Image (tube, rainbow, N blue to C red; front, top):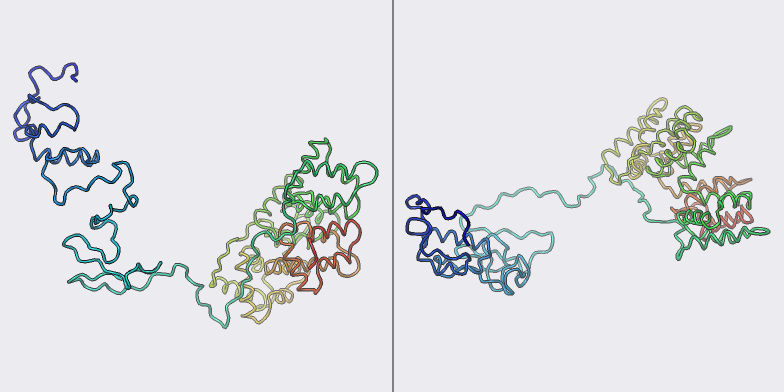
Length: 497
């Protein structure tokens, strides 16, 4: 195929002497080859062999080397590798990255099996003891070649999973592992249908009287997330608010328990904090219970929801109703900024234990700010180790030291934080026991813990309750409550131990 204007009249200018790859001077040659590689071999007599050897090598690398004409250039030592079985574009037998069967890989590529033969002129590969490859994680011993100096002995590198650094003292501190997974008594209901449950609740409240047992069975058998779907389906199907209908049909502690179950976890905590602050007096134990036991993200969600609903921040609400070091403790906890890592630095553990001792037992007066800084900022795993180290170092429990050094709301607040950090289920078991023992029942505390922990760790709380008090939580609820209120709490409890 020719193009307009080419070749130019008079032919191409002659090439520089010695640089003409086509042989005779002048372009084009009389019998130039047609386009295509298949006929190049017929014109080798017109080519400069040295130039074409390099050009053919380049074409071989570019096009795969399958159709390069034979005899065009001198054969390289050892020849070219044969075409893989199946042709180019198909993986060779044994997979990519492996040489064809029976062919030795080039030196510097994939090592052969132990005992194999290296390329000509190289020392033999070392064979591993016993023939097979060394076990995983063990390095083979390097071969020593003739005339090679032995390698210097370097210190070994760090272990892959280094153990905990050595710890001075008679015993290592015991760190109680946190429970993992869902340890709640309430889980998602299988084959859940929110529209069907909305209809069940509608029938339970329609007409004369209320079917309380149907309400207990329906709401006590599904998770909080599913209850939110029931609320939406009820309004969609009947154009009415489920919560308002339940308020008009129920009363007393049974009503409070049912309405608590229909709030989201964050919404319920916001409601409880508002109840603890408003009016004469403050339920300090409720504030500490919520702020000390919730995760960082949950606490931050509480702060956002509180401001949205009541047009003031949680911190402003705390400042308006508390004072002194107890106020500072609550404000620190309300930031939701505790370290949530699980690693424990034993050097820092010792430092913090000594700092707590220096701030309390080892001085006249107490540095409450030091206690606040450590107890509100450090991770749970770290503080469990600190409490164990404090016990070893001072021969006194951290809680006894707090009781000796502090008083009033601050003492109760610090003790609650320590107990919750040490063993959260045991902390709630104690709270439940105090709510039911003696004359009268603290129903708000009982409802709050049973509802808020039913999808978190109520199974662990039941175990701790039985261990600490010798009776099951189910038994004490049965003896301390009655009627439909008792039934809904026992439904949340999930069984007897």
